[in-house]
Length: 381
Image (cartoon, rainbow, N blue to C red):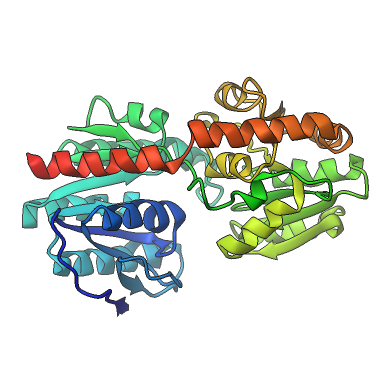
């Protein structure tokens, strides 16, 4: 464990502690969006999370060691995060993982502070797609997680949900629910990356790499894509089985694999591509999700090729900023890539439409304002 203490300043809006046993302290939603927004609004913010490099943005950082297997993380790091959170002595505690639900309730009972559960996804649905849980057990585990969520959120002060669908799943149980969408920081990939150029010759996928996120159909599709198209993939593998399957695929040789990279490196990848790929398979948690990558691609001037879920169709194809496909159909994925490669005029129009939507609607500025308003309302009770 280590601490990075920012220069002491007079904070007039309250003392806040965000904590996670899963996410690194440089997590985009937690650090760059929520914590930095709150610090800039005048809150005294401490973030507890897994060790990583972070810029100095007025947030106090307490790091947990990045080690151990899944069970050790769920048990040991969760307990350590709780102990450090207790030491902070915050007015508001804001936690981000289902394994921290008992600790959030303990903080509420022990300190009397306001407590927020930030649900990044619908965990009871997400578990149904977890390959590391035996398939017959997934419904039982999902039911148990859902029961624990319901029990805790009735007794704490606030649920913040990353999508309207997640918010709706808590509507009957939680005292208060608000959707704070995980829209991008508008300035992060603009303006240089937001202007499609003639030299963009690649497609990209950026994010966690897993079977349920469609890595195999995507690789299958590359056999039907012109060899002049560069393929950039950045992110980490969701387990050794996924890594071996991807790297042994006959089309993996087409891929430039960057691994897990910085935000500035991601921006450079975006600038060299003419389309971004988000072809998640239709497991329950994906159908109603709003992946941050969709909006990042749009922000960077990339038309989106994504799964044909009704929500995603309404976000992307119906608004003219991409093409939806059957994510399990390599031919459809390849056809969409070839359409965008060959019809650059259409590609440019979709890119410009995506940038406009980010500027006018899908950006963090409005969401950050609602986050601050939520905090002020809690402290005003």
